[in-house]
Amino acid sequence: MDETDAGWERRLAAAWAAIDDYEPDAFVRLIDGLAAELPPTSAVARFERAGARDSTGHPDLAVPLYRAALDSGLAAERRRRAVIQLASSLRNLGNPHEALAMLAAELDGDADALTGAVRAFLALTLADAGREREGLAVALTALSEYLPRYNRSVARYAQQLTTDLDI
Image 1: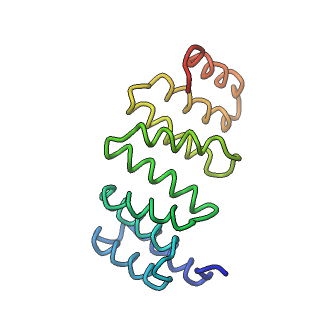
Image 2: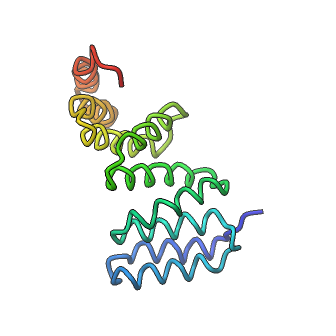
């Protein structure tokens, strides 16, 4: 059985939509209050608490909560979001190599609505790791899928950027 219901999800979505209306500490308290409505071992609660801290400038506090959420069996879209957000936090904290491994593994799975986000954060992480050319190739490859024209050309140029590189 799901640990959340449609009403809780609506209240959560409303809180996230209004994040800019809150001071950072107040927003964290709001999300913590919603999370407290779920079971104490809830992976969803841990993920949402991590996201609140991350989004208010505390990736250092978010990382252990993201890890706990993933270890607790976070599933479906939230699991993928947690991987992206954890990797982003690790990158921001100066650990691009762990972030690279996580994001590369995410690209090995099936494509979905978050694949572009995985690629965007992978491109940023490659740049932070001193692999800007590869990052540009990843970004251009992702972009090529959304262009109304020149898709094949941009994809080929991206491939040429990495001809002798292993990404």
